[in-house]
Image (cartoon, rainbow, N blue to C red; front, side, top):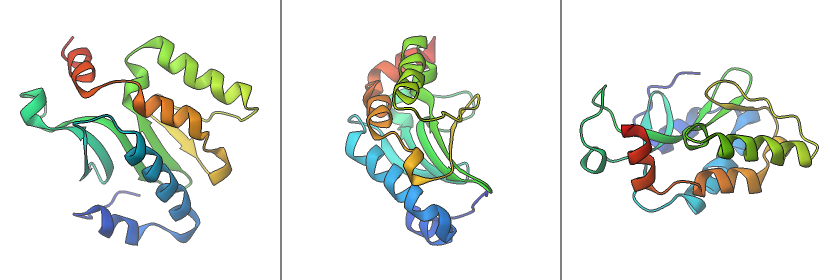
Length: 143
């Protein structure tokens, strides 16, 4: 579901009832664990957590670097954890946490697809969000 909402509040008002609890829980996890410097915004039709352009400098598309995003799609809520794709050990640790918890990880190239609140592995999401300081993420993105 692509949204034209200008604010997070407007976006939350648009989300279907069967997905709102997932989005709210993910948002709370992200906001409570986001390293300093990143900020919450609406971009690409979803809630994003980004690096300010003042910190990153010019980007290839003129938009802030996205670190995390949450987007309600037709059949799932997408959790975009860009930081775990920066290092193989972060992605592997995330996948291993799901395996150890006995949960099936529905992970695409860019996102984790979550269909039910009980599919949110809170500790793994928290670790992924905390994984990279803004400065470290900027440095990795510049390579």
